[in-house]
Amino acid sequence: MKANVKHDDVKNGFINLIFVAISVMIQILWLMLLFVRLNNYSTTASIILSILALIVVLAINGKHTSSSVKMPWMVLILTFPLLGMPLYLMLGRSGSTKGMRERFEDIDKKLFPLIRQDDFAIKSLELKDKGIANQSKYLINYAYFPVYNDSKIEYFSDASEALEAQKEVIKKAKKFIFMEYHAIEEASSFEEIADLLEEKVKNGVEVRLFYDDVGSSPFINKSFIKRMQNRGINCRVFNPMTPILNVFMDNRDHRKITVVDGIYGFTGGYNLANEYFNIVNPYGHWKDTGVKITGNAVKNLTVMFLEMWNAINPKDIDDKIYEKYLPDVNKELKNMPKYRKDYGFIQPYADSPLDMEHVGENVYLNLISNAKNYVYFMTPYLIITEEMNRALGLAAKRGVDVRIITPGIPDKKFIYLLTRSYYPSLVRRGVKIYEYKPGFCHAKMCVSDDEVACVGTINLDYRSLYHHFENGVFMYGCKAVDDIKKDFLDTFKVSKDVTDNYHEDRNTLSRRIGYSLLRLFAPLL
Image 1: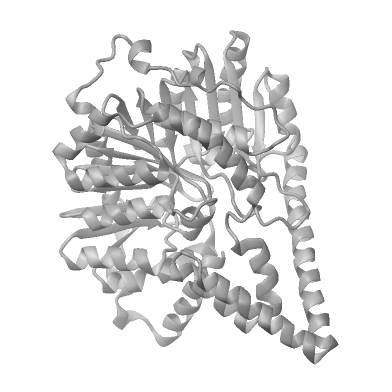
Image 2: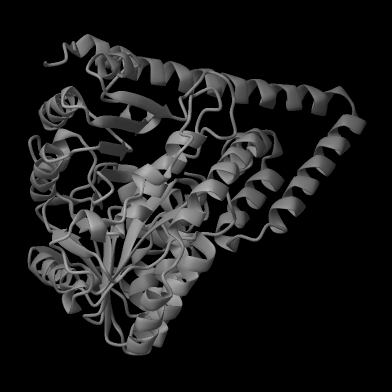
């Protein structure tokens, strides 16, 4: 049954998002006006406001986070306290919602004990490469996601191929299907999925769909949930935007996950919207990638989904039993050997803004510091901390071939300008920059030394690294690593090496000043 979706309905959903944004801005302006009136009321009020601004700045400075993130807020609040204070109340306090943190912690206490690390897997990895094993141990100890050597992973260099593989697996579902995406568009690509989901519901399969409100607002409206429920698809929305000032609104669900029967899992850079599969081409050819996991490593993706599904709204009826969604795949797939040499090691992991552990950034930093011969990145946005900038530069200086691919055609022109502002400092340190000529590259991945790779949702920007819920897959010794390396080499061939355009001697004084200002306030975007 096709959903009857009118263009005006979707337009109204987008208008509602604009209304929410305007309402929030009015509240920020009201706070600014309040501060102005207090400031003008008396000298005492002005002094109190200045002291309050200083206290906030000292509190920011004392946070255990990157100086690149703290400095813009400190400058803004001290220079323009009437603007900086309200903005910081809304956008600067990532993960500051106590009730939300407590709900996630309660769910995690029940979920993570169900995916404890297998000693054989980590010891086997230590015997192969101590440095890579240390990276896995970091994810085990601080993100709580184990590494597996009894699962296989397949890489797709094109999102359309990944989607077709995804649909084939959905057709075979017997027990449950979980889907979590930042953006869903009620158009042809998703409708094919929705029809399959509806058919599986009729066959007794449990189907759940989870999406981010901001990510999906340009494509769907609030009645989307009702339409899905009418088709038997259990649907929830993450962190709905409201007209009320809310410090949690800046934290979005940027993950892309599909789990089928706890046996098969998909993730990557693509959302469920037509542009990701080049059905429409607003920014030239859209380059996106993904992976399919088969085996016990899918448990990590299942836990990520169940965490978000059960923690987001205290009024929802949540799961009481989780074990039924975490089957022993070796028993379920009796024809799949438990261990094979080409399986390698697979470790799906997640990152959350509700703690101070910046897992996504730290995985990248560890990979860069461990690189011996080369490390390649592909990212749609390049807005990085000085720590990341320095790590990439140090790798290049010690002889590592460091390359970054960014879009040739931007989807957001201002962010594109900001991305390019980081080129000169990277080039000065020996990093090579490539721009994807056919269009927009949305893939978020890296590969190093023909041994290790990461694929997932984590951009090289402040939004992904500090504010959003994200996920990725760390892999070592898999055939997929070779496939990712090959895709990078193929992509370099259709990309333009712009490194020479950004040497210091080619930058005018006005460009340097402009880039410096852009980079100073990049963490606020």
